[in-house]
Image 1 (cartoon, rainbow, N blue to C red):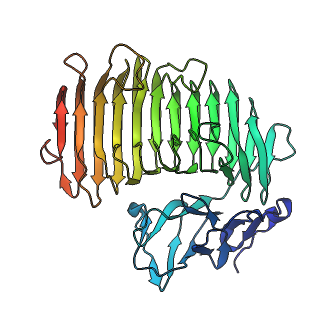
Image 2: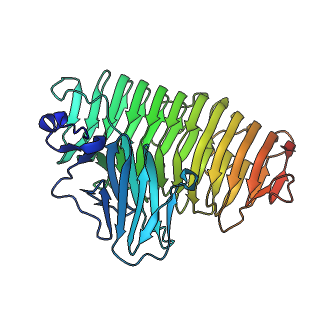
Image 3: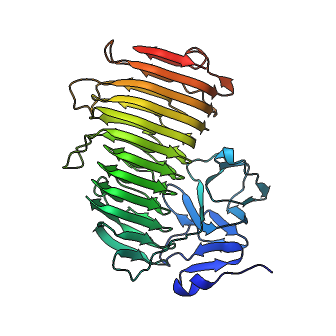
Length: 447
């Protein structure tokens, strides 16, 4: 007999827990469902939210679940990304069936239409739901739409957005410590004008955890960390297609972990910077150190970059930045996939790209530049040193070209290594076969 867990159903009426440890969440009555997709998990209907960018469905589980995606028009072909997951679906008429035995963040794309995907966020089951009666908890219940406005959260507080909740607001913290931002629900930024309010802003803070929830349709940078330390983004899902909607910006910060996230933005997916002062009044021109982005899925839209360092680099150094075990399923715009745009004085060094799979790169593949840009403030130029690519695969219909460009003989790119770097099945072993242009560049090595 299968065990059926119902204990949380009584405490949280907008959560359903059913057989096989599957957790579904009741959407608010006012929520708009997608007109073109339906989803069933273990025979149970899952609400599919409608947004400008994509249809979105989410649930939590452990063990194994069977999914059925129904598209309400004929299906001629489909993709389940990231392709590295090797999810084998079966198509019958207009329904795709497949199974999952571990949490995944997926994009299901029908008939090669990347303008209308279904994003499925299959989460692990939550293990630390806070007590909503705790005075240090800002608790947004499921099954409701909340409009709290701009909320400032403080040291030792937890913000919890329950599954099934939609919060139309903005959150920020200044000089906070020991803060958690958790849940399975949605922050919807649609109420704001462009650049009016960020969904989440972390400023001059320490020990911050953001985990599990979804940010939808940001009108500004999604969840930037300015001049902060010990910040963790885990299983965060970002779905947006608006100007200046950067996914995760790490600005003048140290010891930052991005782990298991899904980021679909029109602008940069992840951007590492220092000294951005046109949105904040305090100093963020601090050295950046010890940044790790791993186990994540990225989709960069019409402009911006996939994995970006720059353009603002107003500190002495940006160093020890690692991008590891990530899937870039689409990089649509004319800009770049792997990019370092050093527009100020910083020495950008000790950068590692390791075990990364690129499924679709339509602009520059590698775009490294030391330059004076419209964002530059420093009068002197910086350097780029000791950059390593290891175990990179690049696929797609378009062959992407690369450029590595220092500024002059004093401000060079020095020490770029490409090891086991494959473009369309061919190992990169020269600037010629990798389609790369270089200037003011020393010690470019192919292994």
